[in-house]
Every structure is written in structure tokens, then in C-alpha cells.
Length: 182
Image (tube, rainbow, N blue to C red):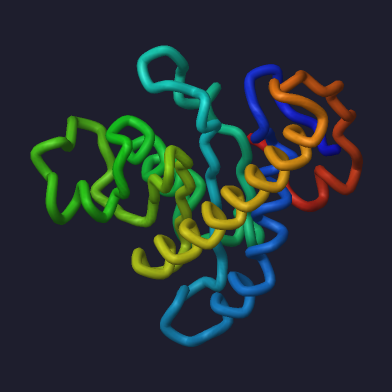
């Protein structure tokens, strides 16, 4: 069974799996005219067990992944994605909903961009495409992450009635090639 954190089933390896499953569709979509001017994207996944107010946002980031070379980007999509993720995390709401329906919840310093989703307690944000595509990409990753959680929960149930801590596995070179936590 894959590793899990001391707290729960989802860790950076689960996030990496979810991104890897979504990646072929995301990369294909980024090549489509009108999706992204630079054919790049940055994804941020927040640890679902990290609670706003009890954890700093940088410590709450579970995994980040970039498509394209950030040094070549015309904008800081990493910062934009992080801002979207932080807003979704603080509000427990999709950033599109905050921007369009609940702007009264915005605070000084919050992003005015959307593309972050809150799905069943999972926060995923994307930046680099038009916001409606950023949101679609974030939803794809969140959906795969929910599936990975279900898969891991099923495997854990087969071992017993309580979730037990599993030994951590070392990060491999492949992990660093696929994506890195910043």
C-alpha cells in the first residue's frame, strides 16, 4: 500500500498520483487555442487535514506541480495559484463563488482571480490558463484525488477497522522529476 501521513490517507504521493492521472488531459487542453496563451500551468494542492487558523498556509501545501518552465512564464502563475489555493482554503469555497457571489468575504491581500476549488474538503488551485479552464483543471485533479483517497481507504479497511499509520517511503528521483513541493 502507498504511504500515508501520520494523520490520514492523503499525502504528497497521493497528490502526485492525482496530478499524473489528470496530466494527459491537461497537457492536451493547454495546446488548444484559447485555453492558455503560454501553454503553461501551476497546480497547488492543500493538505485536507490542515485547518485554517491552526496551520500556516505554506505548511498546509501538500503538493505543487508546474507544466512548462516557470523561468519562461510571462507572469508568476505559481503565486497566482497559491493565492487562489489560500483563498479557497480560508473560505472553504471555490474562488469563483467568492469572486462572483460572495465578494463581501474578500480581505485585503486576497486574490481577485478564480481557478481554485473546494471539493469535499479538498482544495486544489490552478493558474496559467483562462480562469474557467484553471477551475476545470483544478476540478480534474480534485476528482482524481478523491478517487485515490477511496482506493486507499478500501485497502485500509481490508486490513482492519481502524486506520493505521504506514511507514513513510523515501522520495525517489522520479518523484522529483514529476513534480516538487516548493
